[in-house]
Amino acid sequence: MTKTPRNFVHVDTWVFDLDNTLYPHHVNLWQQVDARIGEFVSNWLSVTPEEARRIQKDYYLRYGTTMRGMMTEHGVSADDYLAYVHKIDHSPLQPNPAMGAAIARLAGRKLILTNGSTDHVEAVLDRLGISHHFDGVFDIIAADLEPKPAPQTYAKFLKLHDVDPTRAAMFEDLARNLVVPHELGMTTVLVVPDGSREVVRETWELEGRDAAHVDHVTDDLTGFLQRLKP
Image 1 (tube, rainbow, N blue to C red):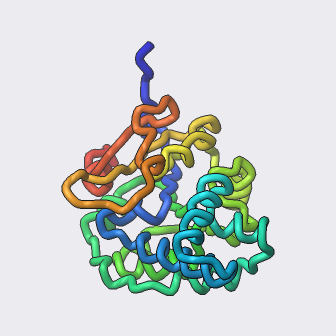
Image 2 (tube, helix red, strand yellow; image 1 turned 135 degrees about the vertical axis):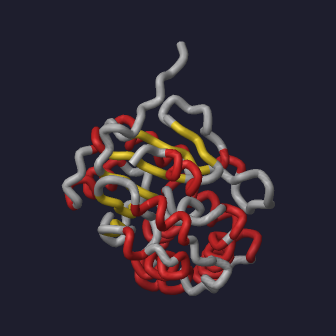
């Protein structure tokens, strides 16, 4: 049976992930964070970079973030972890006034829901020049350190920002993070690489574009938003 994707005519709250969603995958900004995470794991556990990489990716897949795995398995402090892994060079990001204009014309609130930290969000949005278009940020601290795709994280987000999920849309680069939003009634959009540049991702991170819980897929978020009726 062919699925009928949900539309946007009823949407009054627009929810965006941050990394690899509000900027292109090929910028590979997350690659810097990824490398810092590996260094942190290696240093904390006194293991080789190769073993740290294995542990890092295992925890990422099982716990939603490597940080959650390190906290659960090894008692790591979230503050120490976040301060270390987000100390990166944001200069590869360039201002994106076209995206800003496309976001601005969306009717309703615009919120960010991320597994990163508010400091990282602010640095990214400042580089993109789109900070003023957003009405709020829900980060990993607001989530009580429980990352997406944990159901309780979405519940906390919806309650804190008084969001009716049946009148909301969610934009994400990981299909698994759209399962719960779709179950709650949100219109879901998966943002994928444009295919023209090399991206550094795990295989499973690029899967799911044909999943039933994905209403729309785009490799050009700005263009996708521009085509929506205001």
